[in-house]
Image (cartoon, rainbow, N blue to C red; front, side, top):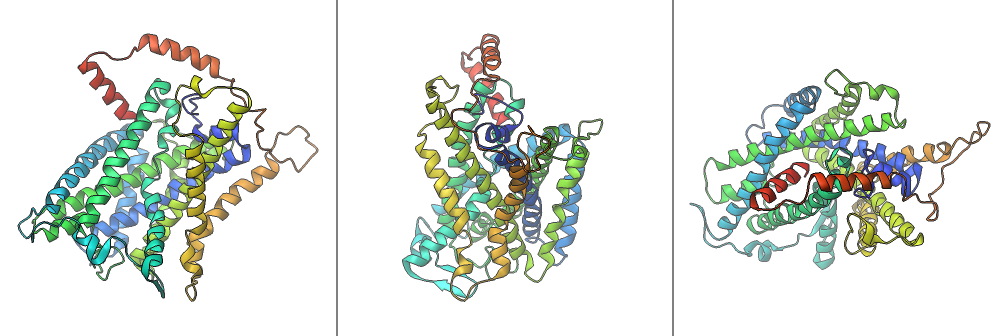
Amino acid sequence: MATLFPDSGGFTHYTTRFLDPAMGFALGWNYWFEYGITVPTELVASAIVIQYWNDKINIAVWISILMVAIVTINLFGVAAYGEMEFWFSAMKVFAIVGLIIMGIALDCGAGPASDGYIGFRYWKNPGAFAQYSHGNVTVSGAWGQFLAFWNVFIQAAFSFIGTEIVVVAVGETQNPRKNVPKAVKRVFWRITIFYVLAILVIGLLVPYNDDRLLNGASTVSTSPFVIAIENAGIKGLPSVVNAVLLIAAWSAGNSDVYASSRTIYALALEGKAPKIFRKCLKNGVPIWSILVTCLFGPLAYMSLGSGGVTKAFNWLYTLSALSGLIVWFILFCTYLRFFYGMKKQGLSRDDLPYKAPFQPYASWAGGALTFLICIFNGFGVFLKGNFNANDFFAAYVCFGVFFVFWAPWKLWGGERKDATKWFQPTRMVSLEEMDFETGRRELDEMDIIERELHPEPKGIVAVVWDWIGTETLV
């Protein structure tokens, strides 16, 4: 959809165009909420990392310092933000590649304190799968291992949320019909290498029952990579790795403010948010959009409550992950309507600038799995004797947030054809009425001109330079 109609409205535009205007409206606001609630999540995560060095100073001090730094950078404008993120991103990429290589070496027995080849030792003892434990309930056996595995989907979703942000930038991307497909494919391989391989290495090096992990017995939670390095007896390196993790967490919070503030700014330009959020400073910074987004930041101080930093972090990342999963579910629905709309009108997917593989089956499978994760993410509170109002609220409040955004626009946001009618609901876009033409001819002509001006690179130097340009988009 993004390569066929590159629009600055991103996927809110596609949902409005191919699914339902009310869904498009709610999706935009939910996306703002998703990234906004992630800001305090990353602040708490950063504070957890800092506790590795000093757990005596009140965590509120670190949260306050990090929050002020985020607000300051975003107020300086996109130039300062982009410069910092460029260097932080490069640092993170080099760090994760180095950690994966080092992890493989440690697994093979490297390190002054190593007791030899580790291999899959921890997959046998204590095991590859933990038993599910929540509150007063512990479920043992194969069923308990499955529940523990299912429970991890929320943490995984929190890490994967953001892969869709390529579409947010599509309206400002040079030659999107060429560069966006390249970026999407490289995001897939980055996930496979950096996420999946890193998790595999961690699973080999650190048993799930290590007390230094989050939710363990220790009062100071430590990155599993740091635990692996400490176990190998390598001095000094744990602090370096933790410093990189701190930068990564803070940088993520910085990016969250940027993405969230630009989302509400775009909504204001489309008349779907108050006009005050359109106001910009001389350097182009949407001042009120940034400030209202930063109001999420103080939620990080929940970590000072009786539940402690771990409970606050779990609460916040659950809210962020579920909001993101709701966005993903609607995107699956939008694409399926797009797919069947083309089929209904006799249009061929072979004519699209980019043809996604395994469709529509991949979208049906992804939508179904996303829906199941959303519905059953809070299954632990329904186990006998384990109901907790706080956990129930964290697991399902995001549905209420989405409904608050969706319902008013659904009931009163329809076409104002009759000014005398108070109740004017929107309606789902029918397959027959879907618009696959508006703007397409102009974009096709621009695409032809773009290909003439910028032909496919030839030669090693040209190919590498083209690759670097696409990497900037990623």
